[in-house]
Amino acid sequence: MASTVYVYAEFDAKGLRKTTRQVLTVAHRIAAGGKVAGVVVGPGDPALVAGAGVSEVLTVQAPAVEKYTACAYAKAIAGAVQACGVGPVLIGCTSAGKEVAPMVAQRLGLAMIPDVTDMKMDGGEVEFIRPIYAGKAIRHVRPTEGNYVVTIRPNAFPDHAGGGSAPIRPVAVAFDAADNRVTVKSLEAKVSTRPELTEAEYIVSGGVAVGKPEGFKVVEQVADALGAAVGASRAAVNAGYIDHSHQVGQTGKTVSPQLYIALGISGAIQHLAGMSTSKCIVAVNTDADAPIFKSAHYGIVGDLFEVAPALAEEIKKAKA
Amino acid sequence: MADLKVLVLVKQTFNTEAKIQLTGDGGVDDKGIKLIVNPYDEYAIEEAVRMKEKGLASHVRLLTVGPEGSVEGLRQGLAMGADSATRVWDASLAGIDNVSMANVLAAAIRKYEWNLILAGKVAVDDQAFEVPGRLSVLLDVPVINAAVKIDVSDGAVTVTRETDAGTETLEAKLPVLLTTEKGLNEPRYPPLPKIMKAKKMPIDELKPADLGGDLLRQTVRITGHELPPPRSGAKMIKGKPAEAAAELVRLLREEAKVL
Image 1 (tube, chains in turn orange, purple):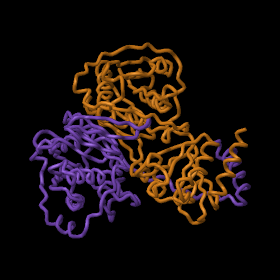
Image 2 (cartoon, chains in turn red, green; image 1 turned 90 degrees about the horizontal axis):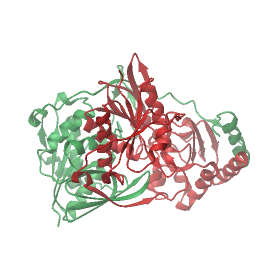
Image 3 (spheres, one colour; image 1 turned 60 degrees about the horizontal axis):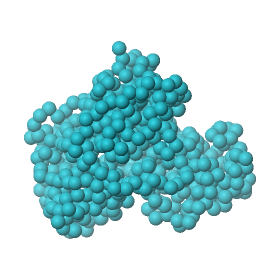
Image 4 (cartoon, chains in turn blue, brown; image 1 turned 45 degrees about the vertical axis):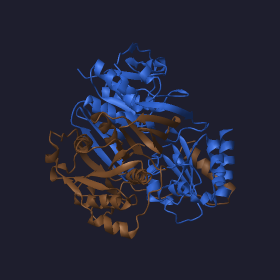
């Protein structure tokens, strides 16, 4: 009998994270009709997972996991999986997922395949496909054993339709003082009303051509018309126009939205590497020979300070 | 005053402007590619050296697992101000996966006295974000990832980092493993005399046999690589800004169907 496939469920202010729904899609492909269990650690409503298309929800509640810390959460996830019979463990490649995954893998003695964007089944064996060198090459990799941990890149797979109402089962995990070696002193939640960069459906990015920090206002105009996240090139970040948390590229975030609009970005290979898997790429640049136009689907040669406001207006009209 | 003994984990990677080509048998071709210290590891080296300059650290040792060429990365770190460096290698380590890599590093780390390990949060080549987390479990030491600010006092670290949830400040007593993020510091370019001096510094060499135990285990098998399909170039939209914007929105709705 095939083992249960486990999915670590993550929450944000809006509820169950979109990435978790996408991870569920992968879990069902691997389970091929078998059991898929959601794992909820600490706060977060298990009922949301119970209705998201799983056979069972495992919950781990303890003082050690009231606030998120990577070490304690990894122990909780590994503990729940161990208690219910080790199987493949699937985790979203989010900021938390990235850091708990290797610890879960090490605790369970399993292989790990990170940042997966595609998969195929080949005669009962699973092959994972993942970009390396920030998308400049694509690697095909198979675990050599039946169980493994994988992290799934946000927006690479469709959301699972969900449904049902699975039973919720608390699992006891024994924590000790060592699990509180890292303590959270403060967490300032993001105040942005815009979506999270790596999960966003639309992204509008600005390059060094914005010229100054205030120059990003015009990028934000387009972003807000679309309901998009704001990204930036390394050059814009290095120039001090915007915070590094917005950087897209090999030394920033890797994104894969439906629509990526690059305003005043020339298209250095290290930037292209971070966004080339976007479904549709639009570039606006004054230089008709900018390399970004080779990678884009649509291009406009022009000044971003003229084109962007017009674009914001047209998008608003189209959405009205 | 805390007496930090710092180990910095260093990896050589392709430079980030490198164009990737494949070999005939589906591997990644490293011929002619300039290697650099993984950019995130540079932040780790710089931070360790600054701790030393502030009198917080008494010793900074660099540790790498890699072939002959990776000595260059260690020399760069020594020129930046690290005190000593260790390279672990023999042919049995070529192409090992991250499970084995973590085992080898953990065994090497156990040879030294330390209370702080610094490493880049991720390597820009395989982008696994995997080895530090495994080391945390193997060495039973807490890990805090992606630090953009590190303060050390009274045998504890206070670390600020950015996550999907927001800006977090975490605290942990030593010993601890910290991974470093862009924004933590500006790595220095060492002056020529220091580069020359670093060339003459000894590098401690270890072989897996010196580390004992069964360290290597293959848990993943790479079945091949491919290059992303080349793009044919953008459809260029002409006209005044307002016209071009209107036409673009029409194409996004009707042709690309993303709006």
